Structures are given as C-alpha cells and as structure tokens.
Length: 437
DNA sequence: TCGACTGCCACTTTTGAACCGA
DNA sequence: ATCGGTTCAAAAGTGGCAGTCG
Image (cartoon, rainbow, N blue to C red; front, top):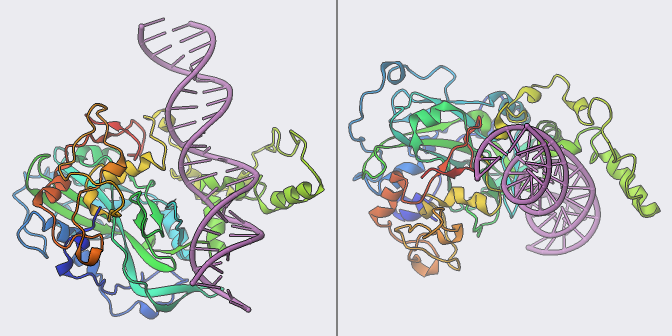
C-alpha cells in the first residue's frame, strides 16, 4: 500500500519543517516554535493523492458543484475553538470529543508507545463532525505527520531536540472502516479512531502507521467527500489538526508523569494503578513469594480480590476520566454489534479500501488493482491479499516509480467494490463492524 | 558505557461462543 | 424455533522490567 508521496515522487519527498505546538505544551522547548507555518495543512498528502484523478497535481482542484447544503449546516463559520483546517467542504467542522484528556496529556508532553507489533494510541482521536450533507458520502481518514525536523531526547525533566530527524518513512493513512458513509451516519455519533496502531517497524505488513521513535508527530484527520459511490469525481476535502494531540513517539515511556497519566486514564492499565494487582507493591510481593517457593493455588490476595470500593478506584477519585467516554462505556455500548478482534482482522481497516496507500513489502502477495471481492464470503479478502499489485520502483526500491492508474485513486474515492463495514448501534463508530452490504 | 529497543510477564478489558430458560 | 440474558474462555491491550544491541 502506498502513500501519495510515494506514488508521486516528482512532488518531492522532503518534509518541510513545521512548528511544534505552541501553548500548553510546557515540556517541549520553544526553540523550534517560531518562524514556521503548517505546510502539511496547506498541501496535505491528500491533494497529491487526489491529483490522481484531478488535473492539477499540487493543489486541490475545484470540486464539482455540490448540491446546496441545508442552511443550518452550510453557512456557519467554524466555532472559535475549531481546529485549523484546510477546507473545501464549506460549513464542515470537527471537534475533538476527548479534548480535556488530550489537554491533560499535552500539558505534560504526550508520549505514544510504538512497538513492532503496533500499539494503539491513548488517548485516541475521537471527533464529532457537523455540517455534512446528510445524504452525501464521505471518507474519514487519519494520518500522522512529523511536526518538525528534529529528533528528541528526554533529558530527565523535559524533551529537548537532539539532532536531525531520521529520514521520512513511508506515509500511511488510516481509513476509518465505515468509509464511505453518509454524512448523516458520521454526524450521528462521535467518530473514533481508537483502533489506529502505531509501529516502528518499517516493514510492517499490517498497515499500521509507521513512525520513528523519539520524534514529534501530529495526527491529522481528513474528510473527503465522494460525490457518488461510483463517481469519478470527488466533492471536496477538509483536513483538521488539533494542536493538543501532538505527541512524541517512544519505545518506552520517558516521562514518569505520562506513565502515571496513562495508568490512571487507560482502563487496560488498570492493573498498574495504586492498589492494583499489578502495582509495584504487588509485583514486589510476587517476586518475593516466587523466591520463597511456589504460590498456593488460590491466594487470598488474588481471590475475591477487590477490596471494598474496588481495587483501582483510589487513583481515580473525582477524576474526569471516570466520566470520560474513553473509559466509561456509554450505556448500550455493550450491546453494540460485535467487532472482530484486533490484530489480524483489525488490519482490515487499513486494507478494505485504498490498499495502495501503504507500502507493500515485495514479499507479500500482490493483488490486482481491481480489488476483487472474496468470492463466496461476502467479506473482504484477507488483508494480505488486499495489496495492490504495483511495479517496483527504480533500483528495486519496492515502491512505484510512477503514479498508479487512475482506477486506484478513483477506487479510493468511490469506496471500492469491497464490502464495507456496517456500524454497530453503539455510541462510537468502530473499526470492528459488520458488512454494510 | 549508555541510551534505545525488544520480549516477556501479569494483569484488565473486550469479544464471541456456548448454554439456559422463557 | 427464537430471543434475551448469563457465563466463560480466548484474544487483545496495558505498563514494567530485564536483557540485548548498536
């Protein structure tokens, strides 16, 4: 799978410097903060990509005429707190649902673990969108771009630049698996990208977003209007960036305050909370017991276990996190349509659609660009078969030397013939869902 | 020598299948 | 036969830590 920049090498691969986020990010040095613009928002990756079907290669060509938007949706300016965005979708605005949580992390200096197998982001990007044409179809995309050209290093108390950034890795884009869906669908509930995974494996075959460790990144969310499912035209694009979602990728947490925040806020880390069974005290006790000899089959310490009031609540008292939907399932969520387990199946999310976004290792199976459907199941073909068949680039780079046929781009904008997931009844649009057709 | 990375551990949450009763 | 609720096991996700590597 390939990113537009790989597909259009003539546009250049260098990533212009962008500024670190000003404001609340107290742990990041301001040294790089001045004198930059946000080039990625000016010329998002998508415009290069969209050029595959539009004439002008570097700018967003004027979209075909849109049907009139409902007055209530189409004319209002974005609210003052709206993120910076590149708009050719008038009236569309995004708001970060879990902004407070992000702000809390950002005030300390957000770190995101990246692993070879891929690690989810926490907090995840969860947005609500307004101003869409309820009838039109849209694609929701997320990518992560470097904020600047520096590599960072934790200096005991703060992050400081420590040299030049590593060469840019293949850009990948996560396509929300509900894409394409109608505006009404997207506006019905917050759109969650919590299944996005970050990896430092440059040969990652799963479609996770590839990042360098110790670099500062910024997630971006793109909305693309596909005029019709089977149209050759796109109907506009809007890109959004939330400054508080900037993070530094790491293979192990550097700032203990971030560790504490993650443990306190992430339900999967509940066991590491104070009084949790995996807290330091308990771990030490386990080690001692191990050294003394084999543990009893069922120890009182681990048995019915939870002290009155619950083992992990003590670190959460009055915490906004408890009311944060990121942690507290909304009533009815348990009843939502079952999602496929993550790992293998979750990769579908990347591959159901524009498989060509991503760099396909040459050793993986290839696939005809026509994206044939799995013959009998009605489900998408296994992800390993969803890669486009792309000619290797010069010098056996494994990347294409020229733009793909237009069918690739149009496939992306059309949604493609592959069955698309259907959202469950839960509060969030989820990666795991049932086929729409 | 040291910082970055990896693999494993023990934990929690999520998910889906199996089972049961109305 | 169908539906809804419960239970249980497996899978997935979490940070910590020791060991490895460059």
